Image (tube, rainbow, N blue to C red; front, side, top):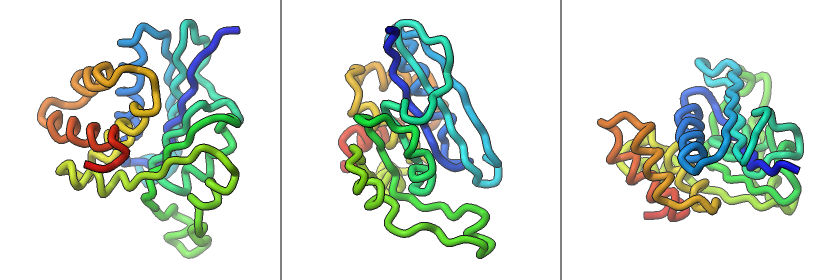
Length: 194
């Protein structure tokens, strides 16, 4: 059977999930893997759900990841982690940014933001790692680098050498933001602490 690594990146429009998926795609390509990436946009320009599937391996035929198939879910926001948890495989890993972004039904008062999401996820027995990526990004020098903090955390959970990730950041991130993103990656790689 052809083994692939299945990673989902879930978040909200404007959080930088697509840049993160491009970095991950470049990491896989630079590591010699066949890679398939599929981006699913909700109302991303209005803070809606954004999901990216990244599959890499010796030979990958489809980018789609079904429920129960994700090796790793990288969640940029708590509610998105909760929403896509069912895609995580039994021995999978979920990396969750503790940030909360109210969706439109919460903003309009039609719904409440669920309580204790991370505790509920942990109570399933799944391997959940939480990080305050926004605070770590601020330490790096720019709140917009929270996505690269999360990529750093992801990198620390794989067997792909750190240098491959750093090279992918170099080739993906605009030059004028490279230094702050390198710093953000380093903080994320160290678990969100300097």
